[in-house]
Length: 313
Ligand code: RIB
Ligand code: CA
Image (cartoon, rainbow, N blue to C red; front, top):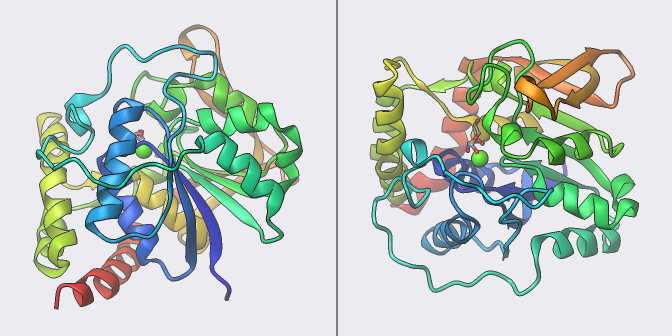
């Protein structure tokens, strides 16, 4: 099977960093470029983190800097440093990379690339959907050129992780989510309904540290912050790896229970950021409602071991 061409739209971010290493390791995915967005940290920090990971692990992907404010122009007042550290990568103290972002903005890159290509392209969006909304607003003609958007975000039948209703990526820019849902582009939403069912145990992370060479050490170091966040909440039986779960959903739908329908995003009142699915067989959207954690863990570990253990020998 031909690998799927993917633009990775991301806010690295600890789980984003893991997802980037995973995408590189999945033979069924062909990453075209990385597009950054603010979210887990500022746009400067998220872009620097993407460049750092590419440089350290020799990932050959161009990095395009994206939005630093919401679709409606609002700046962030508080980044989630209690989950991702102040620098977005667990405050390990990594050096500044020498690699630089491409001169073009991520929105311009998406518009130009989608218009120019004859190959199908999917967008994997694991942060706020600000860049996608902006690109679709500036160039509505690209909507039929996007094969599909696979997104990590939202919650349908489970509570949110920022408010009772809203998940972080959607809560951070509900207007962007609403615009993308209305754009006519097919969307697979991989939200908390699925990602909270696919968890990684600390012991598995320790094994990866021993097996994956420098990648294992990197993941171990950045994840300490994340582990502390979950331990402080009394969660010791495994932490979610949200963005990696969404990456796997893109090429392994068989590991998920997927429901078709139409999604809307609430933008007003106390339910701001809530994603609501109206089920229907011919709806434009699909939602991963449950995940097979065991199969996903096996797929994750095989891909990572095949790619990164070989490198460290
Ligand atoms: O709610 C989890 C999501 O929010 C993940 O994508 C994480 O990286 C943060 O962006
Ligand atoms: Ca993310």
